[in-house]
Amino acid sequence: MKDQRFIGTGVAIITPFKNNEVDFDALSNIIEYVITGGVNYIVALGSTGETATLNEKEARQVLDHCIRRIDNRVPLVAGNFGWNDTKELVAKIRDYNFDGVDAILSSSPAYVKPSQEGIFRHYAAVADVSPRPVILYNVPGRTRSNMEWETTVRLAEYSEVFIGIKEASGDLIQTTRIIKNKPSHFIVTSGDDEVALPMTAVGGDGVISVMANALPKAFSQMINFALDQDYYAARELNFKTYDLHKWLYIEGNPVGIKSAMEILGFCTNEVRLPLAPMSASNYEKLKEEVLKVKSALDIG
Image 1 (cartoon, rainbow, N blue to C red):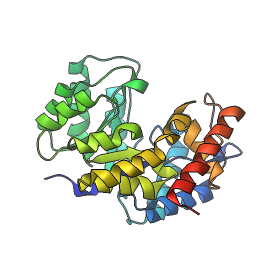
Image 2 (spheres, helix red, strand yellow):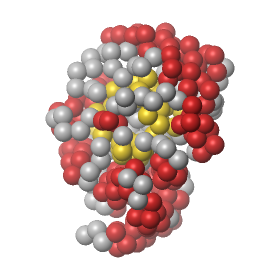
Image 3 (cartoon, helix red, strand yellow):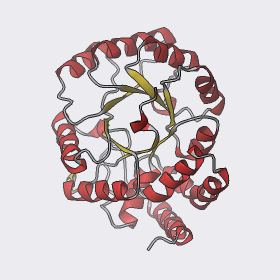
Image 4 (cartoon, rainbow, N blue to C red):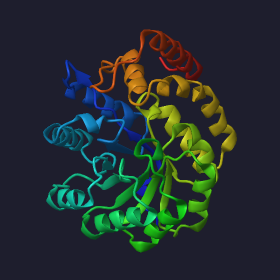
């Protein structure tokens, strides 16, 4: 049976900064905003959360703050469990305090470009030690290697510790093959906002979204409509928000969503090097689109 906690809309929450420090007050406000907006669960410390630029102490502080602030109102996924060194990742999982964490999001190894067998063995080692369910994360745009659909299905069949995948290849053919061949307990969720609707329509289970930081209600409603097979209503919401995608990602993630959240008044658009803030020209175009979407959705 699928873990119903992770069907629908998850939000890959940003880590707001102020004067190069984590802005915990802003983080609290964003958590309240997305929960009120109807997201089904929160993913902290993912790539959208700029985990690569946080040290271990900061990452632990962010996660603990999320645990306290969420207070079991929605499930919490810890996204800081992607590693290139399998041995080090296994050691980290063994030593980690997972109290208050409902699942782990674990990205496929980056940079080293492992074979499909290497990816399988890496994740098998994770399954053998993880005290929490694991959501696989295939994001070849960042890792530079694709986890092929056969490997995903093989892992899903290997252990029920693997409850699903955040599939961010953007490849609907690959995704459809996973959905067709996977075991029944395994969740397939989109890691790309732009294909979240079509992916759900072919049998997927929702999305782990970037845009839901800024538009939690609209994005959650769109996915809920799709899960209920009301594709007309889902398509209408998708069209109202669709042009915003270009400006959110034109200078990379989370640069765009940080600027969108600043425009909406939640935080600064600060990012940490080697990321740089959005250029002034693109910021103005993003602002124009954010205001246009707010008007289309009748958001005050």
